[in-house]
Length: 292
Image (cartoon, rainbow, N blue to C red; front, side, top):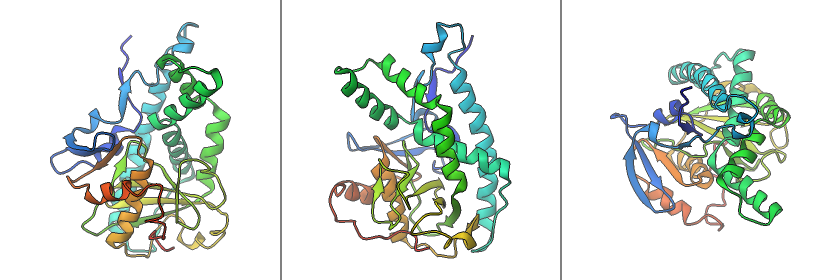
């Protein structure tokens, strides 16, 4: 049986949207502080990352999870490319059409994208090491992570939170593009002052997901401080004209969330380096997020 050996934990279609006009993705490796160009297929991937070795011994196909991800990604790529076409053409406050079926698929994608990354595996592995009192093997790390992804109740509950949220989109017409990362679903507190890695379902916390260098998606829960304030903008292009400071504010979420790699359509990471040096301080504590 032929199995895809390199499994992407951020879909290739998403990465390709942040490539430059030559099809290259610019990468800042935060760990080594190194910038380099590469192809989208080479990033955010590891060999046999989702292989279900714990079920192969029972005669099941170890590539089942990767196949399911591929099928979902194909659907999400088609849905969101249409969104991008519409959002680039419509006027502020105009709505795009999101059928219930598509909303459910995108909600599932958002939940899984958050749970499927290398960052999540590292967190789970650290917890496993604390529990067992020893460093887990790569096989044990893969097992605990894929078991979490196989947890239908957990995934469904997180997907339902996204599905119940108010979705608002914003268009970036500045010279500074939105960036993405190897952990692209970012979470921000309801007052927009802090990014979160833990406590992502705390009241008011909303998700920020860049769809392309010029389009970002927000998922706001029906909780304080939002309640019903944003209902009028549901599935709409925001009326707010973003400036570069607002764009950098959203980009700071990708720097904060990145496990290691920050990805862009241009070879320029000076501001991202500056922000990364302040993480853990209150230098950027004031909110510069989209004011809606």
